[in-house]
Amino acid sequence: MESAEYNDDIQYDIEYEDTASMFQGEYRTKVKGDLGERFVEAEVYRVNGLEVGRIVTKEEILEEPTTKVVYRGTKDPPPRKGTGVFAKPTSVVTSHLDSDGDGGESIQVLMLVFQQEHQ
Image (cartoon, rainbow, N blue to C red; front, side, top):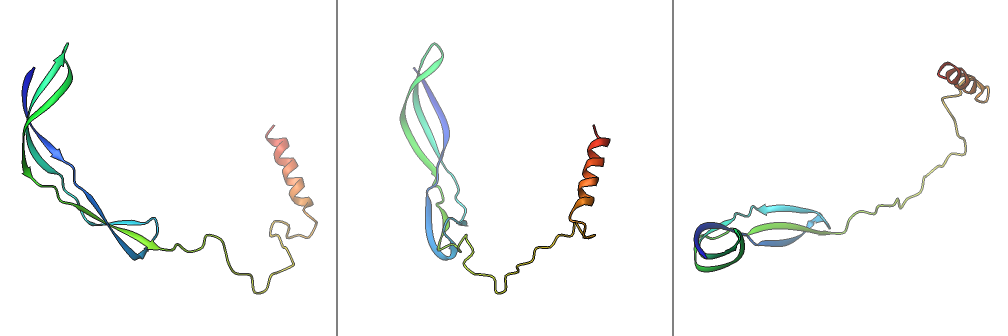
């Protein structure tokens, strides 16, 4: 057994404040949390140099942690799927790739030339 003295961090708590100005699943920090600090005296038990146990004999708080405050959105998110319809849907499909009116034959010829050059 050996005695140990050390300073240790104290984890801060997190509080949530609901707000309707943000969507559900969104979070924003209002107050940044800060770690606290404590002084610890402990008895450390070791076997073959490896720590197998620790008993705290004295603990003194040096600095209290500051609680982190986080805004949490409660507003319903906008719909992910469109809810409207087109006012005047078109029935004609046009293509700028076939502007010469030959039904796409010029594109097919270009593809064959490209394939032959890169074999």
